[in-house]
Image 1 (tube, rainbow, N blue to C red):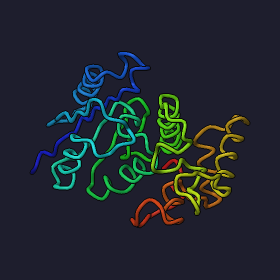
Image 2 (image 1 turned 90 degrees about the vertical axis):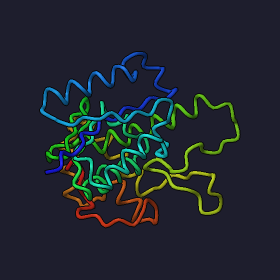
Image 3 (image 1 turned 135 degrees about the vertical axis):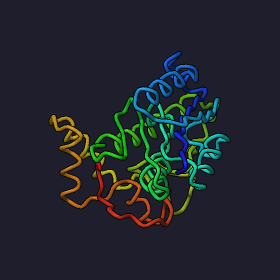
Image 4 (image 1 turned 135 degrees about the horizontal axis):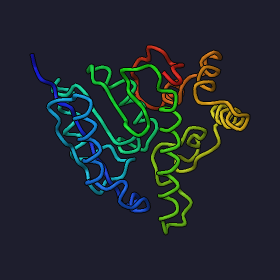
Length: 230
């Protein structure tokens, strides 16, 4: 039987300098290797992209890893946290929720407690959205361009591209209503699991599925478009 690869993926960008040594490639490798050893993951191989933004998925070793995924060589992908995988919530969601499962690949984000073999991943979707916002904030703060045009190609959940000017983002009232509700529920003291259950009970689509319903984010079929926290 094929001993499928345990892909230990590391990523570092210039923005991560703000966090010092905690996100260094050396630190990521040590955390990933220890986790693999302690939890019985065999045939571990490192895939490393140093100096690449999390909003860019055309990273050399990420693409090499995905080639191995699609050829059936990889059984598990492990990262230090969700942000190491990516900081664009639509693309990250597509990879974790649709593409990797299509190839029977398990995904683990150690520090975020995410394991797609389990069903208790309430925080994953929320963290992906927050990671996306963080990436966009860093880009804005570091940019010297005062043109007012967005630096990212995909609007964050709660925004949409203007129909008259694709370089302008407008508030998406439908999605923004959900974002505001999530924050209000947080303020009231509800936890991620409670919020996820409430959104599921109301059949509110997750951000990836919502974007797709509006003609954004690919054409893959969702088995459950309201899988908040699953």
